[in-house]
Amino acid sequence: MDHKEREQLDVNGIDSVEMMDDMTFVLFGASGDLAKRKIYPALYNLYIEGKTPEKLSVVGLGRKPYTKEVFHDIIKESLETFSRRKADPDKLEAFLDQFRYFIFDAMEAQSYQDLKAFIEEREAEIGIPDNRLFYLSVAPTLVEPITESMNENGITNTEGWKRLIVEKPFGSDLASAQHLNERLTQVFNEDEIFRIDHYLGKPMVQNLESLIRPNPILKSIWNHELISNVQITASETVGVGTRAGYYDKSGAIRDMVQNHLLQLVMMTALHHPEKLSAKEIEERKTAIMQSIRPVTDNIEQHVVRGQYEAGKLDGEALPGYMEEDGVAEDSNNDTYFAARLYLDNEYWKDIPFYIRTGKRLSKKSTQIVIEFKNEADEAEVQQGVVSNLLVIEINPNESISLRVNMKDDSNEHFEPAYVTFSKNLDDQPEAYENLLNDAMGGLSTYFAHWSEVELSWKWIQPILEAFEADQLPLHGYKAGSQGPAAADDLLKEDGFNWW
Ligand code: BG6
Image 1 (tube, rainbow, N blue to C red):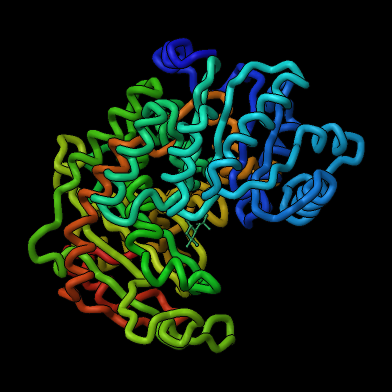
Image 2: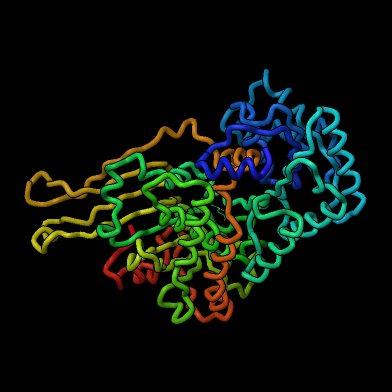
């Protein structure tokens, strides 16, 4: 299916991949961590469900001199360790038979010539057209040279379709993201570029777009006149671990906010009573991102940054960020970020969105809380009436809860009670399965489009600059805590608190 046909399907509101062309999946970084943890298990589970093409050639590239057999062993091990379904011995051989390994040096021109011949040979061998999906699971510095060299060597010059999947980070600030995009779009069109944001692959996040429509109950309460504020949290218990080389330069702001958190804002604010086509979703998300009020002056009044200090979690003593391996001695990197955002559009006007994320917090949780106005009178508030909440839990559970007020046993006071609707998690596809399935089918709804990425960087840029010029205090918070007190103050000023 070419892009025109795909677009037509998108316009008609098709939101799942129904046809899959035969193709070559070229995986750069085939011996890397991401391939083992996510990509092979995702491909396997899609294969078992009959969601991969009838004829698929997977070419794994890496510098290590593996044979095909060693490569297959690596994939088998990855399935044993990370796949949600254990490998079925009857199906495994046929699955593995799709995979070939190619020793590759990204900086060597000859490598590209040989790769082209290798891909073509496999295409001829199994009789498939030159539809090619290139997955760059490599260091960010290699994305541009690999794309350019593939182009120079004719690998991307196909009669069939071509697509590029790129992992985050997409640039490290506005200018570098614009530069990267400018280079990539010399080889691929925007609709051929699939920028992965794995939060968009999470089933509950994908649910957000259609949550309201089939549920009149939710439709009636999801009303901006009733909503007082929205809180989006992505908290983690893990610290920087072994990733200081990357994280110490990126911080929570680039690692989580510019991409995942702002995507959650867009997906939450997207809410629409009618079915949207892929194109409309993209346009609405862009318009939402455009509507976020820039934070350029008095940044410290809207943004809180923090860094974890030594503390305790579940009785275990944990080091502070500055004691972690690989962190620069004079690092003032942020491991925590919170902000207040306003969307200057008709629907969300004057309703604050609070976002926060951090490492080494008390629990792992990704959730969106819609808080409703508390219309109780003074006497009822005295009796314990609190505001209603709609809680959308994305991780570790997937559920929707409603907080309501119920009389307690004395019949004189109210206590909050939760009504929870949760999904059976046993058989849920992983984010990467959803995303790979979409990219292989050419559906880009749940990928970060350039307009969204660029606008996110534009919103982040002044904050980044204030961080870099050290204009904002870096608040310490104890490992295992709820984050810096300053983040609580951000809401207190408006009469709210984090849920
Ligand atoms: C990644 C970040 O994109 O997301 C990590 O680089 C972070 O630092 C991770 O830990 C969190 O993802 P999840 O799915 O566990 O919430």
